[in-house]
Amino acid sequence: MHLLPPVLLLALSGLAPSIHAEGLIRAPLIRNEQARQHLRQSIATNQFRKREQLLNADGREYLVQVGVGTPPQVFNLTLDTGSSEVWVPSTKCAKTVCPYERFDGSKSSSLTETNEVFSIQYGLGNAKGTYGQETVSVGTATVTNQKIGLVNTTKDILGVVANGVQSNGIFGLGYPGLNSARGVQNDIPFAFNLMQQNQQLDTFSIYLTNSHLNTTTTSTGGGEIIFGGVDKTKFKGELSYVPVIDYTVQPHQPVSPNVGQKNGTRANGTFLYWTVPGQGVSTSKNYTYTPTDVVPFVLDTGTTLTYMPAAVVKKIVDSLTAPKKATFDAFNLVYRIDCAMRSSQESVSLYLSPSKTAMTTPTQQPIEIKVPVSQLVIPIDTNDAATATSCMFAIAPADESNSLSSAPTWLLGEATLRAVYAVYDMKQNRVGLAPFSTDGSTSGSVASGTTMTGTSAPSTSSGNQQQQQSNDPASSSGTVKSGTLSSFALTLFIVAGSLFFY
Image (cartoon, rainbow, N blue to C red; front, side, top):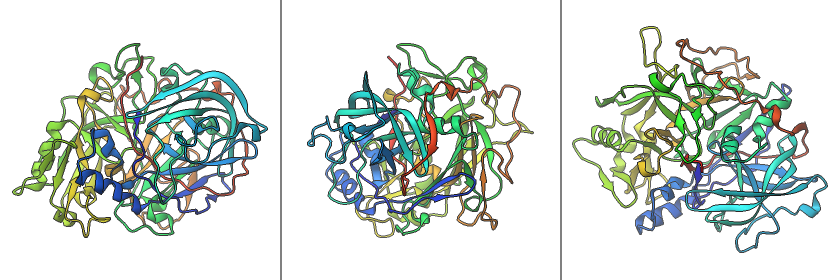
């Protein structure tokens, strides 16, 4: 996945995590409303050169406070489900390039330096340095011998802002296969190392509140992530599960998702991203698009906008804005819409299949993600949609010249994912989804591990191989122990991706 320069940034709340007796790690997500000024200025003056730069729209970048080394040196890292590397700037990086905290290996008793080259290319920038083995802490959870990039040069990744907390590196939550497909060996992401050492920490759960709500000092201001369980008060009904799609990876070729009647049963695939089977989209204004076969939907909490094939997006926008048509901004590749749509009662629904190989059958119904149009209005000229006079639509046409894979791009970013509570199951390679709600249950409980009271997986066809080729994190040298980092706050970042391996 290629990441974007953090033009717009999200502040940490400074709230401490809630660590439960069950061993769960729980922390709030929060936003920085001040960051929207950058978006307003950039769009107003047509300073965006590429679509990718718009993905930081509306200032929604989410950070996790991570301790690196012994004693821990604290970094605010972009929490990114669209990548799998962990990297921080080192003291070998010049202050002009790495303007925030830099990791000083001479002050850590647990660092094992290597000569292995770290190099990663993102959409408009890159980061380079060397790998090390180091102790990494999030809350009370600590992984020793975690492979980590120690960056000595980076371009267009670390943005400089006057206010708020800045992103200062990347904390990836994608699959280990994403690193091995890039040719990096024995690089198991932090979350998978946690699962290796504590089988109850085999999931992480995320919800995002409406991005246009006023920031508060509570977790409802931005959302929350939980390692090892779910918060049943934040969703309605039961969790419905869909399998994660694996990919066929070949040198010098775009990765190919193993989904659909033809490819869904291919063996020996590699899990890379949190990609699930999709089967179409509709609006409440009588537009429906149903593909001829199951397609890959990438669930990417690190991307602000949602991307779909251009023809589909045009039909969605036309159906919702008639009789007054939206204007397509060909320079920024987004639709400008009437800000009055913030009061719209209409909705957009995306449909997921519980099978990698089959569309809906009489006994196998799709899972619906229903997103209010009011949440898809992004203000440009003010901080909030209620007072904006210039707005854009949060669903945009994908640039197929920079496709996610060999398949058409369907990337469900924050714009749509905030409508659901999502449980990312690393052990069983599946994602559980339910409609997000601030009062989904009166129990107030959090279910740990894989035993989730009140949840059930939908039935699947025989072609559903959701547990096929589970990535075995046992190859990691990381171990887990009690952490010493006293507090952290979480947020999510902005990614869009090119899944080509060379």
